[in-house]
Image 1 (tube, one colour):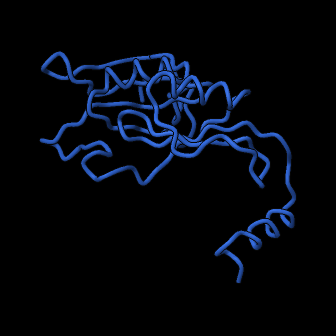
Image 2 (cartoon, rainbow, N blue to C red):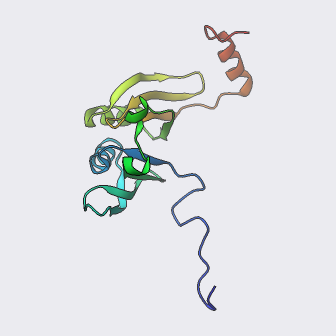
Image 3 (cartoon, rainbow, N blue to C red):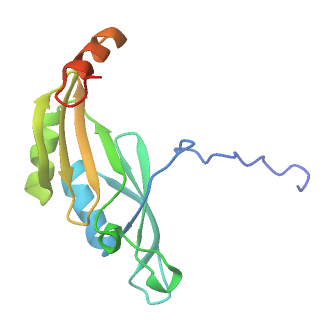
Length: 161
């Protein structure tokens, strides 16, 4: 370290310890979709040598940063389509889940679980974006005790011991 050089923070400003990084086929289109669907703001973008494919971009949805990049098969980097779907979902808390859900569907997402009030206290639904990533959209409506959650799960069909 050079004398009088400012100390670099181990986690950059605006980031948290865990930051999702989405690989998509068509990252530029995906960013435009996330802007329409979820109000994303693009923070940065670096394109590859071809001048088109995105090697790295950062978007912000609410108070969370998400990294986005194109597929690069030559480096073994693929989106969910390569694997038949995504094993991960992104959970998005918003002030009005119904409005956000409808906005995402209007922008091109597919509703996979309709909005409903859940036993865990959220207004909740699930979507698949046009690029294969799964999103849950929720508004927390009430705090539910651990005992009430346990009882609710035990009464679910197929979950009782």
